[in-house]
Image 1 (spheres, rainbow, N blue to C red):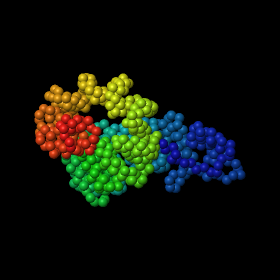
Image 2 (cartoon, rainbow, N blue to C red):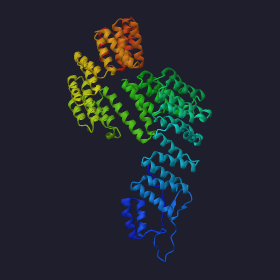
Image 3 (cartoon, rainbow, N blue to C red):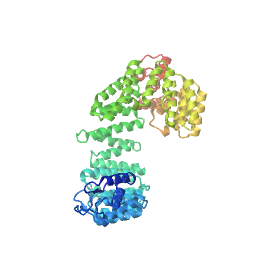
Image 4 (cartoon, one colour):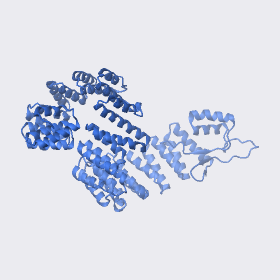
Length: 618
């Protein structure tokens, strides 16, 4: 933080031209304070030490200009301030701080206290900075600024035992309309302390008055709960969220805490959150809608895609003009290969985008146009897809995503070499960009069935990035698509050896064995390891359901595959679920699931092969 501009010196009429030239030259090298001192020493100034022509009236005293009435400085104080700045610039921060603090105490000016604190902070003298901020607070007990400095300094010094009283005074001094923001910001602020238990005790001490005040009790409970969450005490955090929402049913802080608890206390925390989101009062509707959108994003992170889609439908019904919800729905429906709903949502976003801030609208339009182009690419309407790409408002800002979409469009039209060349021409200013280019080219080749070429590119990438587990995993999946099962298994086992916690490798190998009806007990064991790491992953649930089907455990298979399809409507999962229904004699259920699968992705190989093998016609 720089406070050099706080003190402004008032000068009488402009100096002579020679003095002006000298002043400009010195300012360029030493800054305003040094320039002033040099001018005074050269005799160009009008201060008490400057020589004055006898014919001219005496100039007024130099004054420091502060907010409010100016305070006249005597020569001794003026030079004291100049000397403090000189010392600071010349590498004597301790002496500068002492001089500045002495002047601040004598003059009782907050600007000088602030400058003294700043000098100490810039010289990494934390104790001196804190003492200056404490003196400042004593001189101005009704100001919260010195308290904020004290709090930040104590945090930097990792002295939690002294924070409580400072924090309590800061809360008490904050106007009631801003007190909720102060209280809710405490966990993020104190979360930097190394001793989380001590930080929690400090917060509990500081929030006693807020907990007793009905106006702030809910927010205070939520803040304490967030401190519990930082410590990993999920049960206590859940109890705090419950208390907050019992005291104030529309407490956004309590609901936000419940949202953050979803990965840890999913059932109870989600019940609290949903009760908050289902409120219909107009007050706080905008906050509820924003939190609802965050809830959708959390569900996606938890791989609960079907639940996320359901919540997005609810949100767009409750807030039909919430542009960001429509954009997310369009992206999600595109990723789920549902072109009809995806197009509707994306076009609705484009209708609403003009009401957004310009930068946000431009970013959203870029995403919408990219996904609309993908939808038309699936329909083989190359001209329409290209037209969407040409509408992107900032092609340079869209960057690699735009070039990747263009490359896929070229490849789908048979211009594979042109597509590869387009990707290769993209800049690679660092390793991340170089890796991205290689992966994009390999995935493009895999998507169009050129598996051998894709394996070659993955090989190049692994030579450049030999410790990247994702590259080895993707190469293994490509080998599987090429029918190279032995090579796939070797790569996946190597991945497990190098990265024992890479659970996708266990699932991939387990599913491959189950799909080929080989070593089923081993397949189940592998999938169980993956499921223990991520029990919400729909694809792992699908793998487990499929191995149970292969083992003849049809009831367990049906239960697991239904769960997987509910969480992620996917054509391949539909193929498996439909086959279990079919074998169980539930033909209508099977046909209904397969019809859904065809709507999701009519080109899915697994689903089409299943229908041909069973001679089924949904």
